[in-house]
Length: 139
Image (cartoon, rainbow, N blue to C red; front, side, top):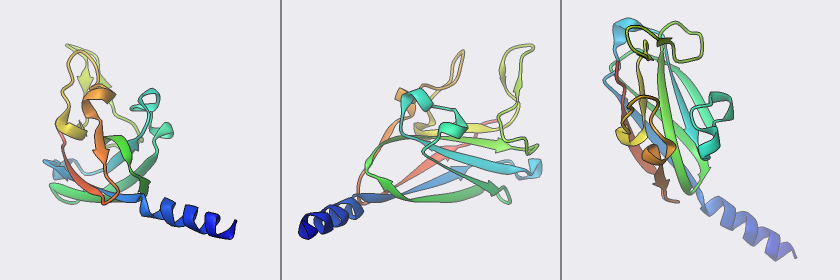
């Protein structure tokens, strides 16, 4: 039984992966923070409190790197908000047409048309050996 538990612990740790997210094209003069969120479920997509993991980092250059360690290998999608005003959410405008006021991006640079990008378009595989992805922040 002890051998089974030890084997289970070792197998679980072998599957832990590191996801590195590189943000590009941040607009530094806008200041604020970057909110980087990792999602593992479509029903949680873009709901920040439901993210599998989340980090907030100050924007001090036009690029930024965040690391998420200990994630199980699997399927994930990442969203990014350049939270210029520090309110913890993506500010939107409604006129003359709906759209974000602050910078935003998602994994795979998934397109948004008449609404947010879909989880299916943003999802990618994270292997046990880890992965680095790049997200372009669009304004």
